[in-house]
Amino acid sequence: SMGTNTENIYFRVENLQKKEVIVNFEYEVQYGNDCFNCEGGHNEYQRHITLKPLEIAEGECNDKFPRPLTLFSKFHNIPNKRVLENFKVKEISVREFDNK
Image (cartoon, rainbow, N blue to C red; front, side, top):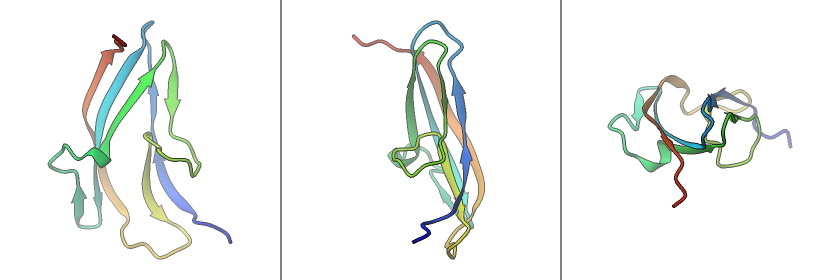
C-alpha cells in the first residue's frame, strides 16, 4: 500500500527566553465553506506546547500523533472531501512554566 500523500502546513515556535515556557494557542480553520473553531474554545483545535530555554519546536512530516504544530491542508492521492481554504492562529499566550 502506498499510504496517503498529504499536504500540510508546518509551524515553528522558538523560545528566546532563558526560562521554560508554555505556549498556548488555537487554530481556526476553513475547509471549503465550513469553518471549524470560528467561535473558539474547541479542544480539538487548542494547542499547548512546553519549551525548554532556547528550545525550538517544529511541525514534523510524519504520521505520529499528536502533531500540535502541523495543520492538514489536503490529500494528493485520494479524493478530498474538503481542502484548507484559510486558517488563523489565535488566542496566543506565552507564560513562564511553573511546575509547583
